[in-house]
Length: 175
Image (cartoon, rainbow, N blue to C red; front, top):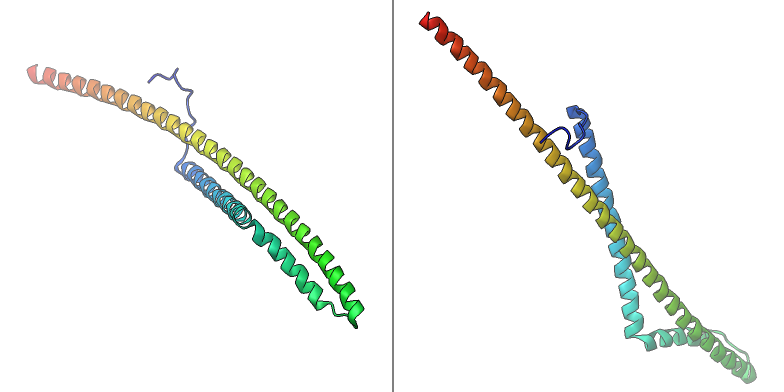
């Protein structure tokens, strides 16, 4: 490889190389931590979505049960008061059922949004890893070429010196 193909890389000391390698390892660990968060978000979204889609009546019935429990807890002295409490409890149960449905829908929307964000982050992380891998591959190719060029030059110089020494020894022996 010629020096024109790649710009000359500054020589790094072993300590600098170790520090750079440590930084790359720490960056990879941070990416792995982010990946697990995205996976957890996607799993939570999927669980909530599956439950609401599989058991829509259970969601409504659960809200009604909470409303009925509250209505039963509210005591009323006398028959008229109990009828009013029952009517209020029924109205409260209906309101709680609507609230439960709204809450379930909001939970589903939030879980879906969290999953999208997690998927976007995973995509960004994948792009970063791919870019880093390509960069490392290019750098390794460059360094391999440099090492090969240096070895070729050293071999040629050593061969020249060996030939010159052999010639001088031969000249001295023949004279």
